[in-house]
Structures are given as C-alpha cells and as structure tokens.
Length: 325
Image 1 (cartoon, rainbow, N blue to C red):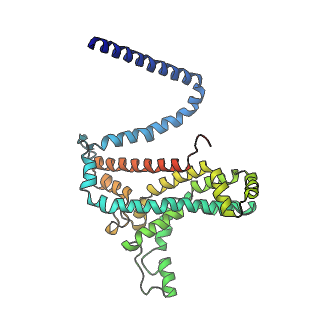
Image 2: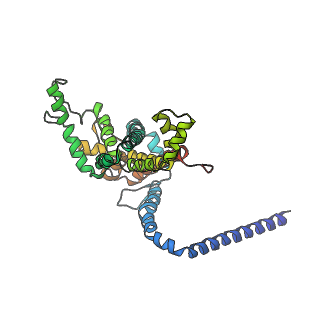
Image 3: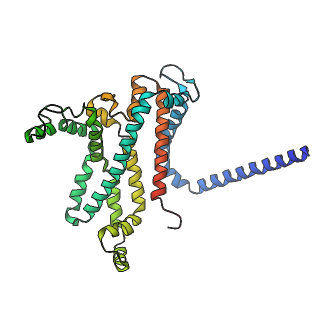
C-alpha cells in the first residue's frame, strides 16, 4: 500500500506545481498585456512598498526582538507581547482605557459631526455653501503646531488664558484653573481639540456624496410615504452614499487612533500628568525615543496595527457594498 500512496502523493504534488506554474504564467501574461497601466502605477507602488509595506514588515520582525537601536537585535520570541499584557502596568491601567475612551468618543463623534455638518451645509444655497465648507475644512489644513498654539492659549492656566478670563469675568470661578495640568480636564480637552480638527477629508467626502444622490429618489420616496427629512436621510440619503460613508468612517478611525500627539502638543510633555492623556501613541513614543526599547515599541505598534485593522473590518461590514446591491 505504501508505494501506491507515495505515487499518488507524487502525482498530486506534480499537478499542484503545474497548476502554480500555469497561474504564474497567466499572471505574467496579463501583466504584460496591461504593461502601460502598470507603468503609470509604478511610482505609487514603489512609494507604497518603500514607505508602508517595508516599515510594517520591519516592525513585525523587530517586535519579536530585544533591540535598543545600537546593538544587533536579539530574538526573544513573544516575550514583548507577554510583558505587554502581564507586567506593563501603565499599558494595562492607563494606555488601553485611555485609548479606547478616546477612540470611542472621537472616532464615532467626529464621524457623526462630519455627516451632520455636511448635510446642513448641503441644505444651504449654492452661493454661500462653499464659504461654510471652507470654514469647516480650514482647521484640518492648518498645521498641528498652529492649532496647538491656539488651544494652548485658550486653556492657559493663568488669568490671561481665554477660558479662565471669560469664566473669571462672569464670576463662575474665583481663581484661574490649570486646565491642561489637571488630570480631570485633560482627556476632555484632548477630545474637544481632536473633534474640532477631525472634520477634514471625511467631511468633504460626505459633502461630495450628498451632491451625487439622485434627487428623483426623494420624489419617489414621498410618493411611497416618506414624510420628513429624517426619514429621507435614513431611507434614501445614507443608503445612496455608502462608499463615501465607508471612506469617512475609515478616515475618522485613522484620525482618532493617530491623534496621540495632541496631549504632547497641549501639555508640552510626552508623559502627561498622572497619565491622564496617555494613549497608545504616547506609549510607543515613550519606549522608542525616551527608553530606546525599539523592540518593545515595535510590539506596541503591531498591536496598534491589529487594532486598527479589526476596527476597519467592522466598518467594511457596516458600510461596505454587498454583491447584490
């Protein structure tokens, strides 16, 4: 029996190799037939490989090593991940709760605000619509440093700070509050600043999507019994602009996850008071550029990457277009 089995295995292995060879030949033939398209795509593909794919692969490899940036990396298996979830007290006690709280409020919050403002502006006359669009998009065009200067002046802890000055003059407080140094207020301020700056590309995508909705659908909806604007939004507008909704959701999530520099910009410190605004990006920066533990920082980056990927898969399931649509 054994010789027969071996012969069958050899035949199957040979047919599998032939199948792979045929597929590779077919793929190369298709590439050659559309070589002009690949030529135009080549600059983008090269940049994407060099600045996205290669760094991700390097980060994944380094996450399994102990690397201080000077000595050759030493392979330690999954020790970084075990340490992260069992012994890193700051990560479990502050980083994860703060990151989830920040992402849950800022991600969906920025997404909903983008849609509401895009819908409201879409109702305006065309002559003034562009001015309001520019006003809402402007914060995302300004550099982060400039925005930080504006908000730092607003929440300054002395009596000259805009917020303290207004509250003191109105009699709501008797002494100036240290808004950016008090752990009670820091996370809330970070959310406000990020929400204000998050309505960028996603807002424009939704505004563009609203302009592509077929107006005849609204007339047909009224004949079918739709009575008010909310029903129009739910039954017609949102289903008609699913691609733009998906794009905006992804942009909102990416913006919420990468917004860790807000706390550093507002407080001027990488480690915020009592870790009140310490999100996962701050933790990565702490281990990479302050402690020079790049292997552990890479492991944190991998966890952040997996977290982002999981959330985006949820977005694709919620807003992705199905085959029968």
